[in-house]
Image 1 (spheres, rainbow, N blue to C red):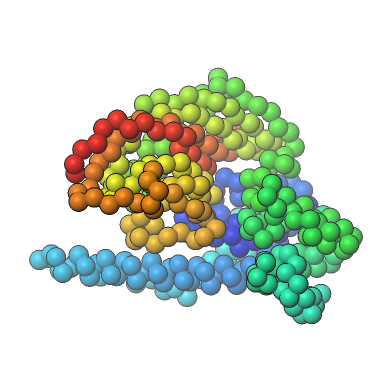
Image 2 (cartoon, rainbow, N blue to C red; image 1 turned 90 degrees about the horizontal axis):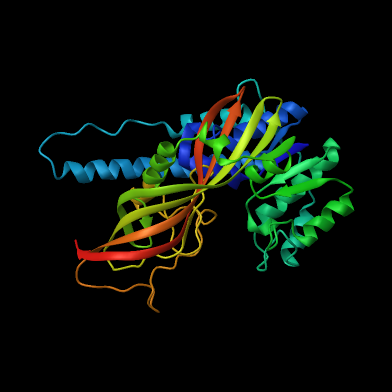
Length: 386
């Protein structure tokens, strides 16, 4: 089964990891699957060009922020500071394009830019009549073009295709392909399976799946590692308008784990733990800690309620892309937030759910990654002036 990726699937890890964005666990196992099945990783030119454009904007913004931060610091110091290292944006974008074409050693992707089968009239029709993936305002025509490209590739290649996108324009409420798009697949006489993440594709297409018990996992995952992962991700993260200034993991308990065989001796493991921690939060406006979700791929952040942001975003006060963060609820009061004269430090006993992934190759454990950290509940311990 050939695999077609949407831009959002690659932008999240690119934003978080830069040049290492193809080394996260799920992507490595995707390449393992493609090699085993002799399938292609298909990247429409639309996706490649869009990803490069977004990366250029991301990198240009980061450079400007670094230069501004250096100037701000220089105005406050006696010592002459070194200049921010020069970064060639065009060179970095070329490197990204090369990586997209060669995402792993000895493995090449397959660019697809055949627009011959794309009818402009069909794109216009879907926009005017609000036919998915066009939205209710007749917008998202970029998604319309991408969907027509997916259909065109499936016809041209005459192979089963998996389309992976986290974009809500393609999916209904339960994460399945929208009915209209499923009808498109049937009418085109092709086979297209939709997945909202690489992780969901890997787990659905493994050779074998088995549950792991705590004793099995304790041999390759250690509580000290999990404690360090949780503390590192939480420390200095923001929740609403507050910042976590101290993290003390108290207890970590195993809940469940699943092991998926992807290759002859290649396995992908997902596990879940219950975490109890004490969090101290600096809150300038007395914004209360509420329900939050961290969902990195491996370090993207999604939320329903208050949201943890990764440190680069916190440091530069830039909101992450809309595809990564959803609604923020910032107070127990009816108003969006409650102001007061002085900031406070709030201490909580918090319970969290941690999702971990790792790879096992040739009986050896590979990368251990934090895939999700959900704040389930909290209890206020004390409040003190900053």
